[in-house]
Image 1 (cartoon, rainbow, N blue to C red):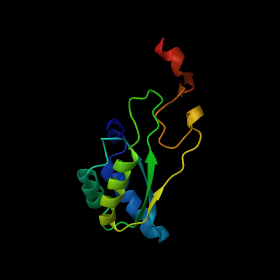
Image 2 (image 1 turned 135 degrees about the vertical axis):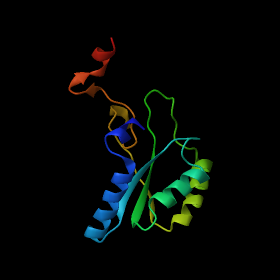
Image 3 (image 1 turned 30 degrees about the horizontal axis):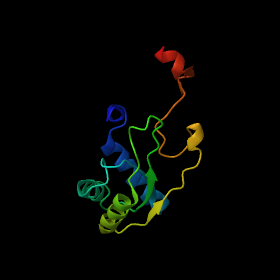
Length: 124
C-alpha cells in the first residue's frame, strides 16, 4: 500500500509490540473487512505470522465505501472468517460503526476534504 512508503508495516508492528509490552495489555488491531478481498485463509495466516508473540485484540469492522465498489462480507463470509480467526487465540470483537450517513463511520472510505480543500472542487 502507498502509505507503507511513509510508515513501513514492519516498523508499525514493532511499535505495536513495544506498546503492548510497555502497557502490559493487548493492543487493539482494527481490521476493515472487504467482501472477497481480505477474509480468506491466507489473510488469517498473514495476521497470525505478523502478530505472533504480540498480545492483541482484533476488532472486525465492515468496510463502508460511499462509491459502492467495496462491500462488507455477507453473514456467511463473516462467520467463516471468524471461525478461521480462532487459530489466533486472541479476543475478537465486532466494532459498531455509526456515522455512515455523514462519512464518519469506522471503516469508511470516503472523504469530503483533503488538506482543507473540498474534494469536489479539487476534482473539477
